[in-house]
Image 1 (cartoon, one colour):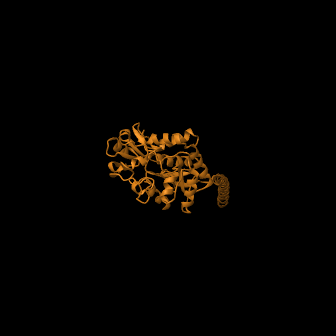
Image 2 (cartoon, one colour):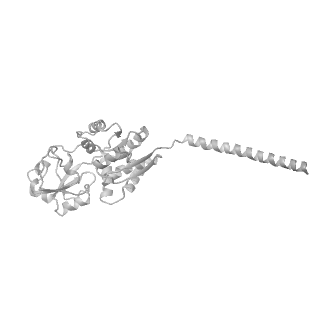
Length: 309
């Protein structure tokens, strides 16, 4: 009885040992396969993309973010953060990793002097940015501040240029972005002004959107600041020509933290910017501003059309 039990126990131990050995071999094979798969695929960075607070800029940030996501980057968004003065600080403080900007506007904010040449302005911007940040190459698209009046106002005061507006400005009310009076590319301070425009009153409205358009339409303001590439420009709006060259080359760029910037990311952004022509940008921006479409939807459709997503 004792011997029989011993033999049975030995067989059981042998069976367990064999089973364990097989399990170890299988586990090793599985582990090897899993390890090979992990090392063969490098996980791509997680990036937070911010956006400014108007349609054109929101589309740009979505274009950058979605194009990166299509290539495996893990993208989250912080939308509608604010104007340059606000979103740039968010980037510097590390709240976001990148955002879509306009290079002339940012260079002016950084106390630089933009020009009408896109590459010259971009080079100057790179020099003004702190060592922790970098800007992409510019897109061909341009979106600048425009001073608009109704056709009836233009006819009444014989307005064609910003210089022709100067003598009658004290009789008129101006409406623009909340930060307009602090920006050299808008009204700026007395020391910053190129045209020395002095209006009867200045109203803080929105970022070239429906509030500003309504104020111009109903006569609340007689002169309005709208964006030439992303605001809804109605048939009876007259753009006063910038005869002294106040507005610079304000091309879209991505502004990125150097700590996350790589050649691969730059290559993706450059492809997006190459597709962002003047006409393409205007159509995208107006789909948001005029047609009230979601910037995410607009950007997604464009990237698919261009083979970038």
